[in-house]
Image (cartoon, rainbow, N blue to C red; front, side, top):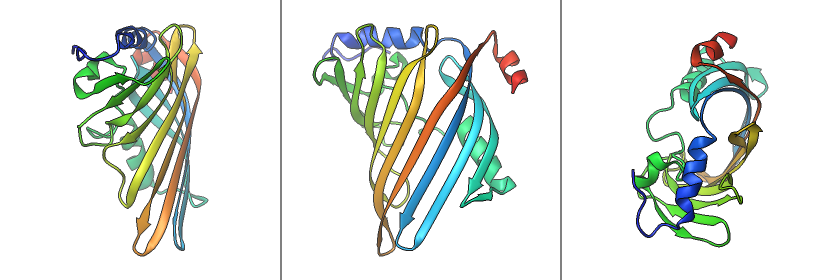
Length: 213
């Protein structure tokens, strides 16, 4: 897709750099902590999984450990989590505004030195409004956005991501933090999700990566 004519000129370089540094088959590990509370209601989850990226898109995950309030998750919960991470429903996974395949869903403007603001009218969890920051080589190092569609009971939410070079010539998200506020029944509540990515390694093809899992 072509970028809008009023987009900052640097967007083209950033998008080209993103595609170039997201190429290949890469394995990773992810640890996720989920905490939510509203009144007397509490929920705490710990999830660990390993997965495979193919050109920046998740193609497979395997749950390593999953607990809910300190107890092992049920088989149904593990299956649901694996499905959600390995095969996200349309509109659930973030559509990066610096990926040229998503240009048509966003509008852009300059927001300061090496920072571009973006917004989208697509009403799902995968699109939103925010900013991303890039370095001198055009690599996106961080982005923050407010999703257009929030989880149930949430009235506001913000997602912050940090990216870095995790392998030679390959960049990926290394940390993501979600913060939500809202209410449940008569009680005000809040939720925090923290994800950390590590253990990156390259594979010659998807088949060999899946075999290693």
